Length: 390
Ligand code: ATP
Ligand code: MG
Image (cartoon, rainbow, N blue to C red; front, side):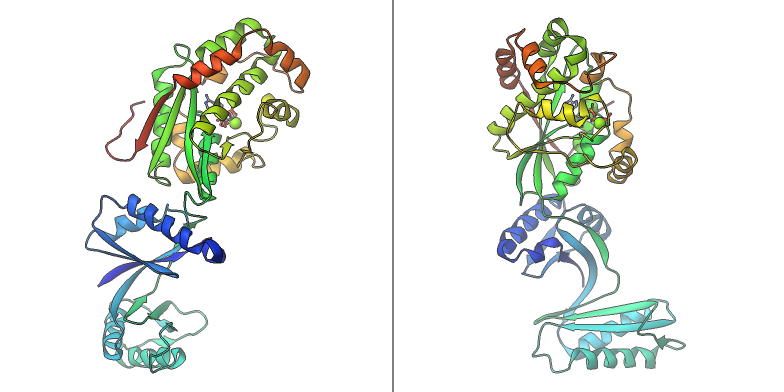
């Protein structure tokens, strides 16, 4: 019988939290595979998935789940010498190779033969029954691995690399500022990989931004559900604030003030949702609002941790990740963003906190912020049946 065997990722190093990690990983896998008929068994070192469904599809889903070091499709037999012998020979006969090696790993120390001797025994059996092959312990074409556990033994060859990282959720929740650009979805992916359960907030400015721009963001979230099966998206109407900024603020400071407003709103939503940090796609030096001086002035409106996973990556490095995770093609679709429509020609590169605070006195933003938070639209995005046309 074929089964999937999962080797845990970094969590094995965190012995204190091990049970929590395994439980969260177990729940994440269960949720991601909810459309399949599977039986999942877990222990302290491994997880086993038994299924009659298509194993390849399931492996493809598992490849995107954080907290998994590697995935192995194994043949499961009873821990019984004759059964292991006949099955491993059968498996070897179905594979074509010139050199091979058998590697045994025995957690069941009551098994009467040492790992080394058992490898030799199976190796000898294979040599005797398949012509024109030889053993190569250093660089074998085919490496057969045998894992002997108490009741069952697992025979496999390939180990498929998992996504690594920590299971989503072990680090708590974070609120990601998601625009339609390239950077913020990559920031989401990187935060999820560290175990943060991500919710998203998107600022739109209808009628200056279109329904299409909003759908693009939803589509990005849908793409991210590969890594976190169900993601909450908060859509905030930013029009009134943006128009007030446009009317009252010196053009050079518009972006600075706009981003300070975004942070204030995001912080309020974050607190309401029990999140522990903000996350965004800012990258040092990328645009005027992302010089260190700008970041300092913008960040001054909040005391909560702001995580910027792509802060120190080059744009090309960010693009590489975006392509790998499947968000790039969506991000480059040409829809306007609320930042770009009001973009002044010469935004300030070195804003001062004092000037920013002075400018902000020109309109009653507190009221507008509360209103924007209260009136936000909250939607849950899940893979099932959702399609967004853009
Ligand atoms: P690009 O790939 O074009 O740089 P970006 O998403 O990085 O896109 P920036 O203008 O550089 O856009 O904004 C920096 C960060 O601010 C974004 O990564 C995102 O986290 C946040 N942000 C910008 N605009 C919005 C928006 N409309 N809604 C939510 N967050 C936004
Ligand atoms: Mg950017």
